[in-house]
Length: 276
Image (cartoon, rainbow, N blue to C red):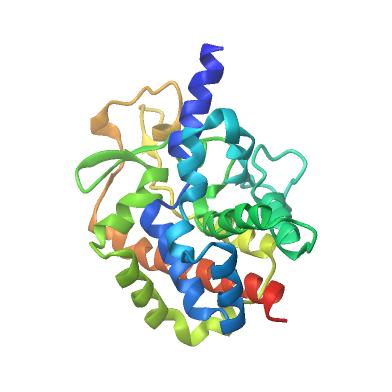
């Protein structure tokens, strides 16, 4: 029981998000790109709230595990490095089918407004999660949560670096960041709307495989492995990857593009439901 409780706490506190700012950016970008009739319907379902306002609700409810623990594995999926196709049946996370289920609920005229509100809040959030590369994990290091690194001289882990630390490092509010990514990538909106949920997951997998810092050599034999991701932890802090401006210079543009893509693709999904 203690082990199970520890696992639930770990999942509920560390693997569920871009972070508050990132999810709000996705919601804000989506609102900039949906058709007017779609936005009217979305606001009606959400009781007048914006998509940015409700985007983090599926993370906030982790504080009620007795009621909502069944949703905890909706936020991620596994797609191993050496697998060409997604192993839907054996993935511990249900991100892809969860997105499909929320879409089906929103299309179902027999569902209540409460059911549709629940589904819409989750859809807004989960499409964001799909575009965070480490939410399409390798099935080994819990989406980078096991991978200890330093970023700007502060010890963190790779997952937190991507869901919050690099975003926070920009010092932009979610509205400023949404405006920035929209200006940067808005000319390619239609191009970025192409593809399926599985295609977008594959993009995250391919990006994920590039973002791990170089392996750390830990012995005279030249062991070449992601030792900073291994458990139980054997490395001292001095041996952990030290990431700074070079890493953020390389990957912040990637992160920003994923936020934009999450927003415009969420808009596409909602327009397909309500405007076509």
